[in-house]
View: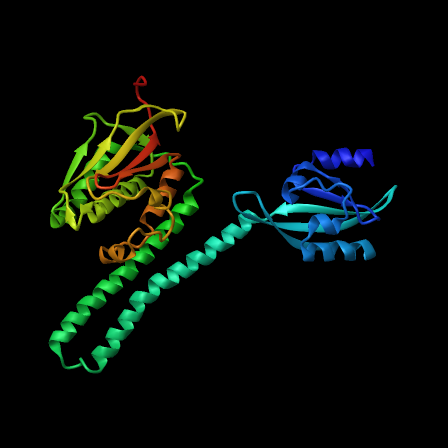
Length: 354
């Protein structure tokens, strides 16, 4: 039994042995941590407590059949879910029931995320669809001969259809980015030129909003290995967000700045990197929102986001793109002063490190 005990104690996952006297004979360190006590020598009913597991052990002691049950634990920070395999083996001391625990928390979390994602997508599509169906019914009925109402309703229907189109486009983009996240980009890309191109494309929207776009980057080219289309998406998304939300009391402060640093050593990357920042001088974001901004469909102000056409997926897409580029995204904000979205990317060095 000493060899078995030594083996069980060396295993990285929770294991418990229960002897014919219905007492726990061996518990390794991970199992003690999970159970929350040193239960060697105690009746298994006293230590395990959860009815499904107790019933499985009791039945396996009688018929030596394999059973699999769930066990709910807590690691001090969150609830955990475990699959417990209950088996019987014959040792020199008699029949022993072996409990082996497998942590399924990551799988459960993924299932929760999938359910939440489906629920959010359904909700986001249902709202404009309901509006469209209502207006179609009205146009076919009471407004069929009202030209003014038709013009107004068709305008609203166009907006709702555009919302659905944006959502579908972002969902497709998110799916593509997630599928490519493990593939490191290999294209040599000049971020200075890319910033200039993006700002030229976005300038009409900025002009309509009364926002000045300022680029602050080195005169010489700054190169990274990047998917140019995806990095365009990152810069455009962050700048458009700053245009949409960088205001105080509904009045835009007048400028959005895009900064790019020269390559220098970045401790978070353990190598040379560049910093690309998009800065507004708006009302800022409260600290408790910052950690959740890149979650899918998370919005600080749902009503305002929908008014300006946000899908709630933009920053999630940005985060996945930056992860693919082996970079980091940091968000800094002070309420009343503005927000900075800072992207740190590995630099492609052509000369000495600055």
